[in-house]
Length: 257
Image 1 (spheres, rainbow, N blue to C red):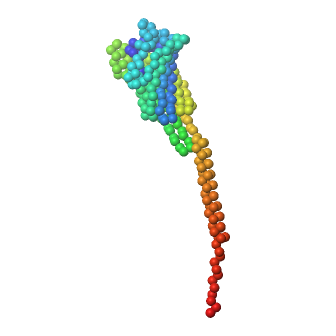
Image 2 (image 1 turned 90 degrees about the horizontal axis):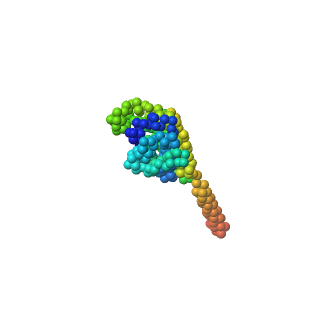
Image 3 (image 1 turned 90 degrees about the vertical axis):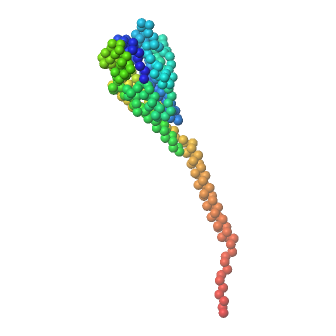
């Protein structure tokens, strides 16, 4: 999970007060159950301006090493004309187990994104693909105290970790904006936008009824039925024809004497 550098954590309460930090998590699923988890994080112009002071830049203010080491594709910070900036990270997954693993890599054990499930049904005439996900921001926290390495570093720097964690959690809940989108194989989507204290359950389902297969099966069945009728008709005709051409049996003759 992404971690703030020590210097940024120390000034975060003052630097980001009143700013907006938006995250959009988009999960797409293919027909084979694989897909991609893509996250776009956007800082508004005020957040960018406050972070990039005293020689800091977005590139060195936020650590993304954890994502890189975990195998995520990490983009670069893109500046927009209005002063805001965004960065995109993504990683593919193969199946339900890997999807849940990607969510843990993305948000840690916060439980903000959890309980992902993939259902795939394959029938003779119908196929169905559905992806489920729970988004829960009711217990949103900065998690500084829960990170032993970060907490130890902050303590060594002379900071009160408990107080900082509480302040950061309060600011996080006020600034938190999360949008989650699930997309099925055919492009159908389900989207939820959450603020702190909210939860949502999402699902994106695609189903396909193979009418061509049913049509050909009906045609094949009709042809088989017609063939059976023709066979039975021919068999009856043959028996009747044999009956007409077979001479009647001679009557039994009883001798007079």
